[in-house]
Image 1 (spheres, one colour):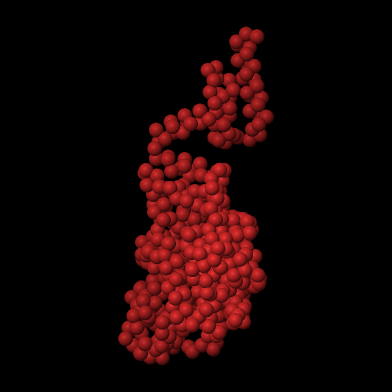
Image 2 (cartoon, rainbow, N blue to C red):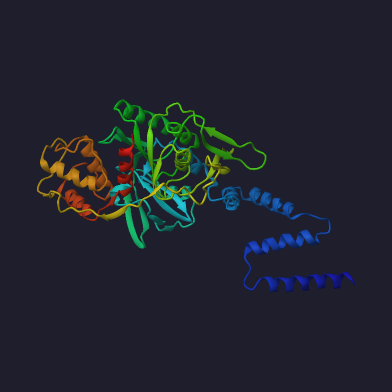
Length: 470
């Protein structure tokens, strides 16, 4: 066959193949892959598809260095949902100590099946004042649809300078809701606690596992122990996780010495590593509270306690994140957040995608707040710092309905009340100057009328169990 006939034959084969494969207009990706395949097969001097692909990447970045982030993020799309390529700004945000002050709305997020979902609203934050709730799915931020976005990308859109606003469209139980929220400075603490009323019992809630959580938790337990507490309810609901070592250290308080807590399972020939309880602080009996938003490090603590029979678990099935990530900073300041291992519970199981089932399956109920038994906000007088009147105490009660907490629910308009009113005003579009004027009082009354509350059946069951322990 002559060279001309050979070329014509190849062209006819290519045309026929293209027509057979592409029933519609081919994408750029399909054309590029076809280019590489044909070149690899027919190039006279020989070349591999991998060499062609590397040459393409080199050429693209040499001529368009600004494409580094886009290209790298695209490469990481081939990895699991917990691995990210992060810009410098995103990377610094990811590494930020959770006890630092950040400017935002005060909500914690996870991505579930591509949907950015609120897992926790922080106490005394713009998010809770505006009525956001755990379980709300964010559809768009300032008009930008965020389905499929990584957590870091959603957070970047939501955060911003203090005093500026962000518009969120939320899906809640099939309904579409719109929120305009004024950003504020949020100070995050990860541990809160109190002594309960019966049987030397205490309550401790961990919001996330930061590098400061262990110290906060240790302080909480020491103070509770000094008050005679020897059994606690450990609330890990809506806790998205955090540092593995923090979870391990906290599990030491409950699991007997030398019992396995968790194993990091690395791929290939890497050596797996199992953490064992040191038992240094073992003296607290425990009931653990979990729900569908308890993930990662919170599941490590839950699994260690449950499988070692060191406590009782109450609530709903946990989220199911059984992988371990590590961070790597790149020379340009960008970073990698990469899944490097999975963790296995003490019985060898990995709960990724399945979660941990509680010993007692209990669900909560959400109902409208009943305001009929509360005293009325009269809206007759402007109230300000230094005032001492019954209406101050009434307004505090309504603010508590909206999620605020006060050290003293008395009739004195103190600095704490001033800050609460100021935050409420800023979060609802009113002028934030800390004076409870008539407009502010009316707004408090209006928003309290729309509020709902959760009947915490899970906590009540935990109390029942902890009070029975001897």
